[in-house]
Image 1 (cartoon, helix red, strand yellow):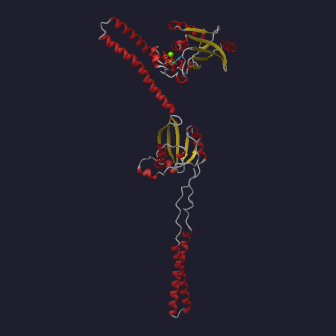
Image 2 (image 1 turned 180 degrees about the vertical axis):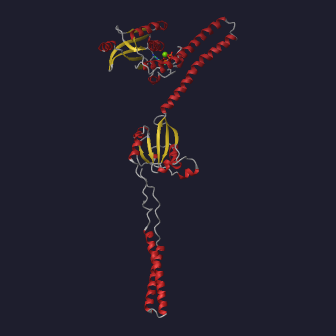
Length: 465
Ligand SMILES: Nc1ncnc2c1ncn2[C@@H]1O[C@H](COP(=O)(O)OP(=O)(O)OP(=O)(O)O)[C@@H](O)[C@H]1O
Ligand SMILES: [Mg+2]
């Protein structure tokens, strides 16, 4: 690191300072001249010297003394200029330091102790704003807590952390780390324990401050989602539980001997108990799928067979609602690598939704086709209903846990709001893609794309080996 040079302008001795020793020497010479003059005068009195010589020496002494005094007066009248106060000289930031700041993975700024921007890495421009070297930090960051933390750290040498939220242009949470540095003084770096008064007194003030930012938005959202999930799950369980305990009290009290009421209440209690157990099943399967999300299932399964099975299973429900399920599939088997139970669950959820929410369309079309994809053939499965459809503002949130367009309608159907979340996770585990299209009033179409397991190609590879 560069150290500041010692002979800075202003700290150099002035001209008046250099003249002082010469003047002292001259004054001493005058004293000797006076003595010599007086001795010659004494010599003249004793007839040992000529009186003119004594007068000459004394005259020289008088003139010399006058010169010295005049010079002194001049010095008093024109005092030496005040030494300029030492200017805060800042050596340029060295290339390795600037390179380190540039290489930091987070937005980072190197600041002078008075908050001037010395170096800003590229990420500052992307995440915080356009930073210009030489500008004060307050031009870039307008959060008073961050500015105060930089000032305080530059004074007392202690690092700080500040969390703050921004509302414009987007809601986001950020964390600023303020670390005071001693880039130019080795003493500061090597000093021992801080905090002790004498040690603190020896430590020089920081000569730079490193300010880095961390985006906490994602973390905060996950925390929020977790909190919402627990609140939603307990709420979903609490409602049927409250209804069950209410019915139990009624059956033990006023309706104890009322046989028709007992019959009715027990039917409702049965439905509530099934809802609770379905919710627990859904939660468990969701966490199981999430747990295995990184393991891609690899058992070859025929999609045509799975879709036929799902449509057969749901035909009684469709008949109840007066809806017809139309299955169109290729005659040849379309084999993918997957988990049969999970795939049944996936298509059951989608066809059941189409039956429940698209009942007014009276028709649900299930299609299985194969199309060419960039990495080989892809199976495309679409489930389409002709009901009221879904408004566009709901589409991005449909696969969130417990998200329902119409909560009451979903509950009436015994829904938990976890169906599409499970669908999304199963598709992701199979490395597939899920798409939703809907035009309100014309129905909704859910499409799943899964890579076909090319048996013929596999056989060719194993034959070559
Ligand atoms: N085909 C559809 N037409 C209209 N709305 C739909 C359709 N499919 C889903 N939805 C809406 O999306 C919401 C979420 O669906 P999801 O399958 O996740 O939950 P659910 O059906 O309410 O409950 P569960 O599937 O656990 O029984 C539904 O409540 C419904 O409002
Ligand atoms: Mg559903």
